[in-house]
Amino acid sequence: MNRAALPPLAAAAAALTLLSGWTAVGGAGRARPVQAEQGWILVPAGAAPAAAFFTIRNPGDVPDELVGADWDLPGHVALKEHRHLGATGTWALAPALTVPARGELAMSPEGADILVSEPPPLHVGQSVEFTLRFRRSPELRVRAQAVPPGGLSAVLASTAASTAREPSRATN
Image (cartoon, rainbow, N blue to C red; front, side):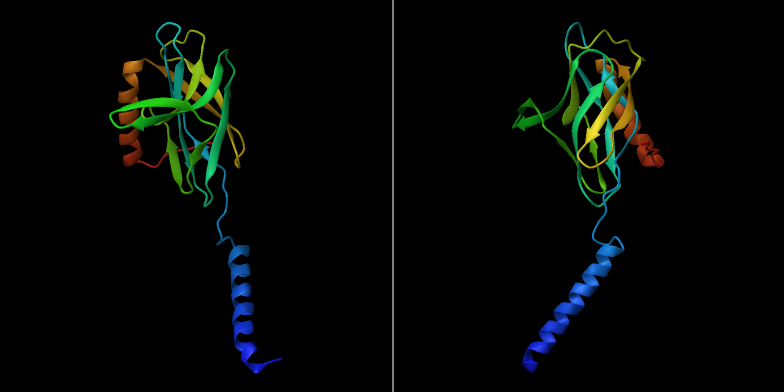
């Protein structure tokens, strides 16, 4: 073997050993199950669709995706995202919604939500359960409290204020 080839081979072997060790102790990033808190569902007017909103946090180093949702009541459930086009916008069904690594998916009327077409009558204060399905994480069962359409902005504002004051208590 050529003596000139030994230093690059030794450096490559050392790098491979260090990278293997870094990966073995979790330095290469780990997926961790996502967490969600209680959400809200807007009480629709008449036969209009309803929209549910949750904040989903990802404590892991690997992005995850919300790929579907169900609930125990009648009505088709789908993921929806808003698309902004200048001063106007539209919405579209989404096959998945990203929950970034070490970040959150904060659903809102201006971003993404869970669309419930043809829901049964809902009453303000009523609590309903959803099952959220993810690409990497296990399913989550979360509750949503029914709020009147005009009441969502106040709920979201108070939630943002309390999140800034104290650590959140996310559940699996």
